[in-house]
Image 1 (spheres, rainbow, N blue to C red):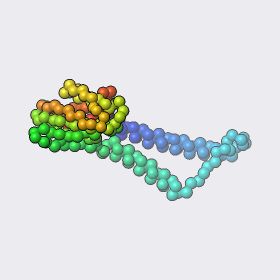
Image 2 (spheres, rainbow, N blue to C red; image 1 turned 30 degrees about the horizontal axis):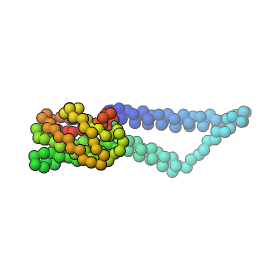
Image 3 (cartoon, rainbow, N blue to C red; image 1 turned 60 degrees about the vertical axis):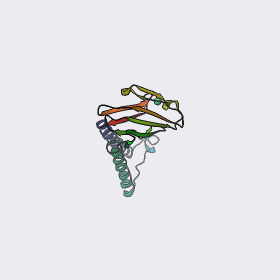
Length: 172
Ligand SMILES: [Cu+2]
């Protein structure tokens, strides 16, 4: 997925260069003196000051940097569960997704995920943890606790009923 993102940015970068050079070419040919005046003379070569070119280049590079940061360096926020009376607890806010979308717990100890649903859309009314055979309806503006005990370390997903929004329980 990360590789795809990099390839995607390289392709879009290449495409941008291709468009830019193609534009320059067409401007060159159309600025040649020609006998037909109506069609070709609507293209003019505009000399832009150097600082404009510099600013555009810097802006482009900035966007590329932002894109690389977004796909490679930004990780979903993870939260470690806190233990109360030997139960590992995390509150997950459901509002246009799951926050946090990554929960870290220990293996072999009961877990209680407290889903607090603020999102009224039907999409997020159900939460499913297929690995633990759990599917639960989330009451709007209430906390719905979901309990299970993961025995094996690993990554276990939770998702809305249609599998559009996802989160991960990382068991260590
Ligand atoms: Cu959904």
